[in-house]
Image (cartoon, rainbow over all chains, first blue to last red; front, side):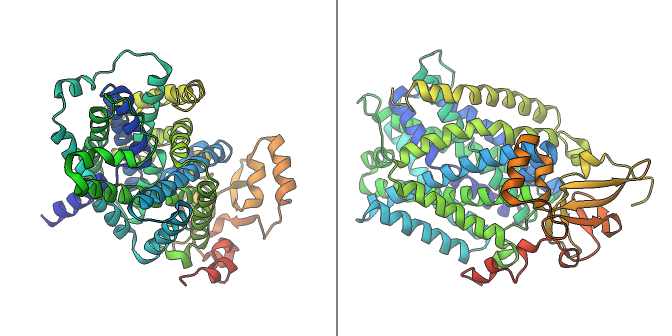
Length: 406
Length: 119
């Protein structure tokens, strides 16, 4: 009973931590521009991350190897280095996007300048990481992120045409570049690679073994399914409210607006609070992911569980990544734009980190009886194909649509 | 390791994580030393000075110019095969990292560690 309770708590934290600034930006814009037409792309992305996370969590639990350990083993030094550099660039952009998002949300809640809130946000995160153990970090931001359930309540309160919503689950045939750009964007926002780098390294931090495989599978199936409900509700509320008005939301305040329309100030505060936790958690996850990757690839000691004294290079690199991200945000680029670039570039880098995981998860010499079965294998390879197509399409679409600007 | 245990060294040994006798992560198998005929693995090689060897020729020269040549005992360490305790999902060594000159970047007396705010 106690074990079930513990697994449930983990799943709840996973649900709350599912969304990040990429989902908030892309899903809200997708709803405003195409109403419910892109729900299928969000769902495909959520299934994709469930498949990828399940495999890498299983690899971590069974063989004790996080993602970049696997990458170094399977790709070797040279090609692995390309994966490391690409992932690190994307991760730093993502950290910048999340920090910028945090600062924007803070300016909506309190009265002070954006550039000051960037510094406040990053200092607050450093203090929180210094004070809390690994599990505490996950729970704090995960449970806080559940405030965003107000989006689900908003969607129900709006009483949308559920038939039209259901129709959004079927891919619609629209080949305009803007539509395709948002297919890539909403898919990629759900499947940000840092989430998986963090998840698999977290499995090592929490000393997972084969006994945690059930937890891993439930996380992937139930946790991500519920997280997907949150992600889809963002599209629904935005599609219902903004699509008829022809509003294109270009700032984060708009994301919370539907909840204010539905539930007044309480709704607004719940939404902003949930966004703050989701984006704050994602800032920590993405910055940790950047340092995990570097340390694992080069064989350094790493992990929050080791502490800064035993893993100094890991800790210093974490602070350095945060510092670079702060500089990017403070340079004055709109955080929403940084978000779009981080999401689109992440899908370009994704095949490099996905492929080695797919190889090792199916390799019996590493995984024994826990190697990919028929279903995991099939899903894994199907998604690899999908990811390759999206990776090839993403940059041309970014250029043609001028970053979704039309 | 008994003689009968055979592994594919590029599949399972090259690039593997190295742990010292106390379980500290202290580098990866960046290269291997093979000697004799038939060749046998006589040592694991580890350190950032070896990274250029693993890159295509053009980049190798650039990298060498940037960080300098291999300096044995400093940026390139030779770990004799006798020091290897076991091979599993990591390479376990018989001695502590310091005794073999490994993991110096993470040694507690290094400046980075001393200057961290919460020590």
